[in-house]
Image (cartoon, rainbow, N blue to C red; front, top):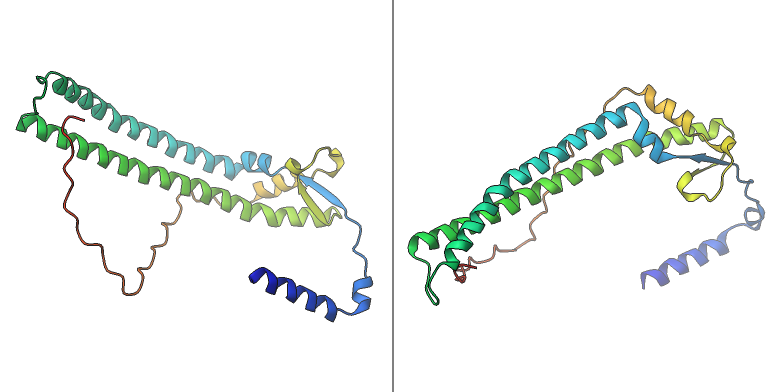
Length: 212
């Protein structure tokens, strides 16, 4: 239905357009080529921010290892204790409590690492957005100064004339801006609760098989 309404609106617009306007010809395309990836990886503030993001990634990996090592060691010890039980035997209260603690610690580690990974991804995307917001107006500026009316990323071209490439000029303008990029994304907006929605009733925990 929306597609039909949109098409109808386009038809009405076309019918209302004066004939003289339809007769106007578009100006010939004058193309400039730009390598945004090279600018984003080479500009001074881009490099500084990328190094901070890399440090965040290393901190995440260190925390992951810090959490995983004791959990893996405890899991192996518990598995050995379970394997030592006589056939059909059940864990004693001490081993059962140990298993329960192991599960709780594993789940807590997964939640912590999952949240940290999401934060790292938001920070990465936040940096990309800032670089593009700073870069794109400069691309437009250089394009106009060079007498071009279209800017095309080098990744979208099969062949190019180096004389059309304005990457160096845009990179120079990027380096004139000494304002650092932020590498900490704002927290995600909280989702508003639906009107009249009630929190789900608490469910009793389901028993889990021991030793697995």
